[in-house]
Image (cartoon, rainbow, N blue to C red; front, side, top):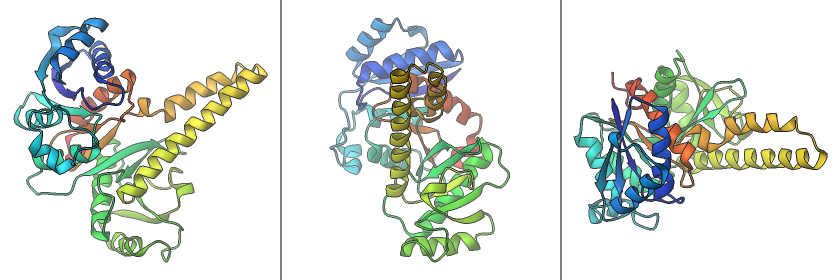
Length: 323
C-alpha cells in the first residue's frame, strides 16, 4: 500500500475539488491510501458529499493556509501550522508517505521542498514539466518556474536533472538536450544562454544537440529543453493556451458546420494537451516525489497526479538521481 499526502488547501478550485479528486484516485488505484491535510471540517464535508471510502484515508488538521500573497521563505517559518508545512514535514519524517501533491504557492512549495527534502549532496531543485512532442514521445521542460533568474552553471545543472529524469523515467539511453534560445546558431541568445551553450557543449555526460527556438521546442529534436524558470513557465502556459484556443476553434467550426466527426479529433487533442490529463510539475532534485498541481486543477487532474507519483515511486532515481 502506498500513501500520498495531499495538501487540499491553496487550490484555486477550493478544498472540495481536491478531496473529490482524491476520491477518484482511491477508486482507480487500489494500492493507494491518502493523507489529506487541511481544514478537517471542510475535508469531512467534501468526503461525505462524494461518498469517499474513508478506510484508506487519514486526515491531518491544519489551522493555516499559505497563499500566493505570502513571502515563500517567510511562510515556512511564520505559518508552521499551515497545510503546506505540515504536509512537507510529514513527508520528510514518515516512511509510509511516498509523495505529495500541492496546488498552491509554487515558490513556497519549492522553498519547502529544499528545506524538508534535501538530498545528502545538496542540489538546487528544479520544476520540470513533460509535454507531448511532435514525434510521439515527451519533452522535459526544465525549469518551469522554480528559478526565474539563472546563471549558466544553473542551466547546466538543470540539463543534468532533466536528462536523469528522462533516462530513468522513459528509459531513453542518451536524452537529447536542447537549450532554449532565440535562434539555433550558437551566437544567438543573451549572455547567460551563450555561456550555458559553451558549458553544455563541453559536458561529456550530456547529449547536447544545440540551441532550440520556440517553434521547435516540442518538435522532438530534443527530449530535454533547458531554460530559466521565467522562459520555461511561458513555454508551458503558451503551449496550454494555444492548444486550448485551437481546440475551442475546432469545436466552434464543428458546431457551425455540423461536422460531428471533428469531435473525435477534439477528444484526442484534449487528451494530449489538457493540463488536467498531463498531471503537474515535478520537483527534481529532492528525496521524494513532490508534484505542483495547476492552481485550477480539477478532480481528474488530482487523480492523474496520484498515478504520476505511483509511477515515480517505481523509478526513484528519475526525480532524485538516487538508486
